[in-house]
Length: 359
Image (cartoon, rainbow, N blue to C red; front, side, top):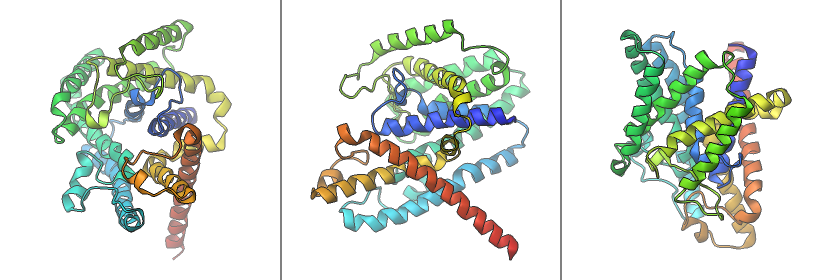
């Protein structure tokens, strides 16, 4: 992989994680493109761009366990301890009852066994999606099914996933629904990387105009849109919650396109910005820790203002203090602290490796 490719992927990851964090604060970093309409599938798309067929199944499985699931369960163990520790002080346990099922099995079903790391639900789902996608890809290779036919099949899978919404109340259906929906975007990322990028210009003025017109028309489909919250075109993939049978797929692609477009436009301007690069290199840690930062700010504000914690405890984990005034403070400190916490963990890991080698 070239340095330019890696840097552009990194910048795409920056956009994706900023959309995740801004979405939890109910604002969009890209006007007209709300975060809940594309940010999760953008991560699937990136995973597809990085998908490598050369490994055996055993090796691919091992690599995904190492890169995705081991860090996940380390975070889950640490956050279980944090949740237990803070519960007496806050007056609420932010999570499900502690059982082996909830801590070891539910991450692959809902991923919401602990509220403070609920954004990490995506990691076990990405693991499932990539492992199953690997097997389907091998099968398609064996029967010589390539190109547009794969896209058609995965598109049908995505449509089928949307139609499964009524059954998503059964939490055991959720992983199936999310996996079927994700294949289209994993394959699209793979196809873009191998057949479109550097071979075809999809960022012409005419295409830009078409995407903007289409996106403006999509706003007309928003049954949940109000000018106050400004979030439309949303679908909640984690719970299989779709409002329309086709719009989630369309708006996912418009969101992915605008993200790729912004990377192309701004790459030369920001490629040497150290902090921007650090954000992209620490998306896992940002996703894992930004709710902890948000809640630390919230409880600190309540304590300093003399407001009982019950006002927070009676709401959900995403409730935050004085949203009209503090949204961007939460956003800036959420990104800043979690990025440098990721950098600290990397430094600590290097120090431990150096210590073992010197010993």
